[in-house]
Length: 339
Image 1: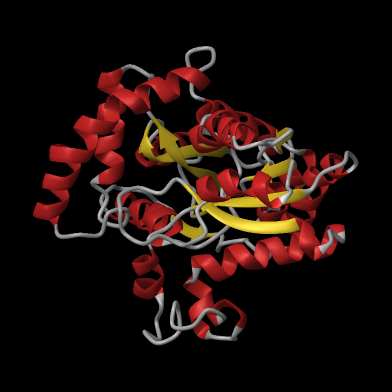
Image 2: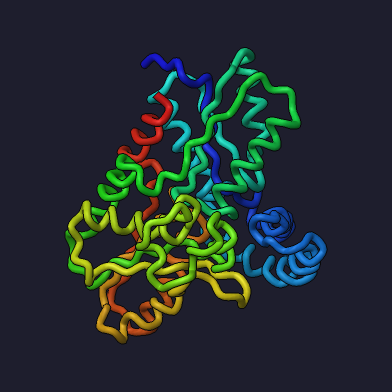
């Protein structure tokens, strides 16, 4: 394949601690939660909240959770992103690097690798591996990459793939990854997206008058949808369901991984997992489309703890569909953005 548009590619993912040891988890949580786009309070309040309350109280439990999914001295998210890198590299001619927003490998290490491999690089494609826009995921990855570029002597400029929540090839890949799981009897398929504080929706709304104003705001056309995480999540579900022709009554959206006591986007996944068996849903299929790589939030929070919650509430079967990871259709989709 001949490629003239880009000199290199960077796949950007969230990141992971270097190990499940408490010292590494503490370091990772501090970096992650001190990001002003994750917890968007004033620096002093954020410092007191994160380092004085959240990190001291969460480190031990988080370290235990990471230890439950850790394999071969590396986290699944890092391992799977490396596998995606290798698979995409086989389909493109330019170097493919990976960078994590938090932890290692860093954005700078990826850019340094490009500088070494392609000293005359002019145009680099950055692919934030977040299907949906949120300032705490897509935006912070983009801004971090821009900052590293601006503060170092690199010859290249960056071009970013926008959120791909409705990109046809991504939707096709999602649908094909789900299809085999629909052959077995199931009562409902739950699309469990990563949660977000509702104030992040209003903060990202450029009109300051659309998001969270009405119960139906996600279905009313608006320029706000370009940066509305909730609308984009619902759109992904809608397009995948249409592609697979899943009956509407067998589909539900929810939001997981809530932190703190403020209002996040409802309904909460843990609440729905508790309630569904009592509503007659005994056979449940779950997927987590906010992630393209399996990680703590999918493998521990949903596959382990979520399953336990559902089964103890009276469920009979619970199946988690893996993230896209290195699904062949997904690999071709990413390579297609490069070539």
